[in-house]
Amino acid sequence: MSLSSSTSISSATRTWNGTHSGMFAGPHPQIQFSLPNKKRQNAIICSAVIEQGVSESGSRLSRIESLSQVSGVLGCQWGDEGKGKLVDILAKHFDIVARCQGGANAGHTIYNSEGKKFALHLVPSGILNEETICVIGNGVVVHLPGFFKEVDGLESNGVSCNGRILVSDRAHLLFDFHQVVDGLREAELAKSFIGTTRRGIGPCYSSKVIRNGIRVSDLRHMDTFPQKLDLLLSDAASRFKGFNYSPDMLREEVEKYKRFAERLEPFITDTVHFMNDAISQKQKILVEGGQATMLDIDFGTYPFVTSSSPSAGGICTGLGIAPRVIGDLVGVVKAYTTRVGSGPFPTEILGKGGDLLRFAGQEFGTTTGRRVVINGFSSLNLTKLDVLSDLQEIQLGVAYKQIDNTPIHSFPSDLRLLEQIKVEYEVMPGWQTDISSIREYSELPKAARNYVERIEELVGVPIHYIGIGPGRDALIYK
Image 1 (spheres, rainbow, N blue to C red):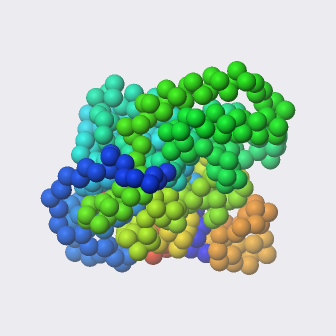
Image 2 (cartoon, one colour):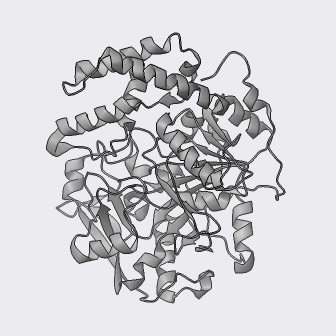
Image 3 (tube, rainbow, N blue to C red):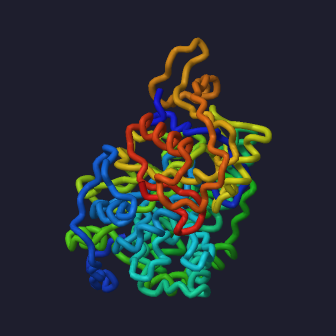
């Protein structure tokens, strides 16, 4: 099986315990403003064929300007690939950056032009670009205390959020008690725990799916809000013996959310209408995925997955836009593979080799912690190539086989099989020199270029962006 289905791109390690990896009848006044028109060339959809003859001096602008009107940046592996950095770089060429799924379990670390570090969880990574509108779509679950803390942190560091963040009125509210329930569920599972971030994401999506969840739009109806919240809290108390619920808790929560409702009002928007109106006005939209394909509720290593669809399909349902408007999708993949939490990990490296990648790659990401075919990527962003610079050789996982050496042609849904499979590796020479200051592809060591081009050959998708450090400028355009 090729890399397009295994995503075992190289020597791999697992990260543990990090800090990672409503619509209304009438129009809402906030969505009536028009977005600024930016000067740009006509958009053309990138081909999935490696382009020839792109001069290195002009590759940066041509790569970015050629992205389609609605483009996406999605994770290919288990998260922590470095999606936020690419979104931050691309955002200045887009009018809107939108999150479509997940919650505060999606952690993106980005740096501004002065090198200041920002850790974002709910706010889209386009927020550092002052002309970009950031949308939190209907598919996202929103923890309001965390959201306001993030906004306050941005504002205190000189990043204006006023009028620049829109929160869907259809998004579901994630309460503190969802986080308590998350921990209680993990405790119940004992040795078979999922390895969640305990941010309450799963319990909130559970409330949504069993149809007793509370949405942002419910904050506009505080006369019925207490009854809805009482139903949620009572349900949790009946399910978990360790969950203590009292009338005082309900009163305190209601009072707190009355204050939250007032503060959130300027952010609340019918984002389904907003997004589709922006598309009709030819505004450029960049979708920022949270987590990654191997954590997809359907296509990941179930049950060791997240509770949403961080693959391409989640874009349409999480933003309320049609499939036909989606153009280029850029897959972000580390130059080596790591994962967060629990679950089978066939290419895991333990010992000194794993420690080297963990610490050199800063694998304790922002929030603890597939296939190319599923997402239809038009290009890839290979990140953290510099982390491999000290290795004498690199193992490239290229195929899975059963114990009897029978080839496996797709990523297994059976975890027992996944735990037992054998990985076939290609061994490639390392380059053993610092590449962090290089900015032109032709200046990379030949061994590094061979590694990049072998990945392209195996997955059948061109690598247009190569990360060689955390800063905004530490990116090679190929």
